[in-house]
Amino acid sequence: MKTMIAAIAFIGAGGLQVSADDSIAFDFAGCAGRFSAEMEHAWLMNDPDARHHEEDRATFVTLTEASLAQQQGRAILSHRIEVKLAHSSLLQQATFDTRPRRADAARRMATQHLSACRTMLLGS
Image 1 (tube, rainbow, N blue to C red):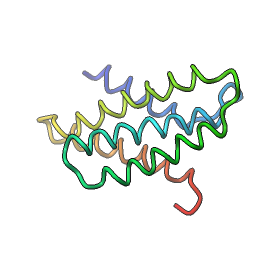
Image 2 (image 1 turned 180 degrees about the vertical axis):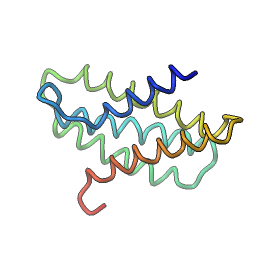
Image 3 (image 1 turned 90 degrees about the vertical axis):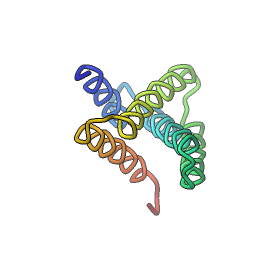
């Protein structure tokens, strides 16, 4: 379990780092993946915030498409899906883990990732 948490943290943390090999499109795609996971989780939990997550997801999808280089399509989509799955795992752990400390840590981590995404938007 600790390995899975470390892997999720590693994947999640890498989603917002820009290096010479990466582009801003990867950051935007990672955020689109995170908000996709939040939106789906909100739907499943009958949370009225689903609409807000859907709007944020649409914004990051648009930003991803606008910043996408021609040869990056598959890699960007793969990255978005990987980040979505990692974020979904955090949300499941935050909601269903029977150990309160672990559930709280997963929720905090998910919230921190969303906050980092929101800081990328003007006016947020």
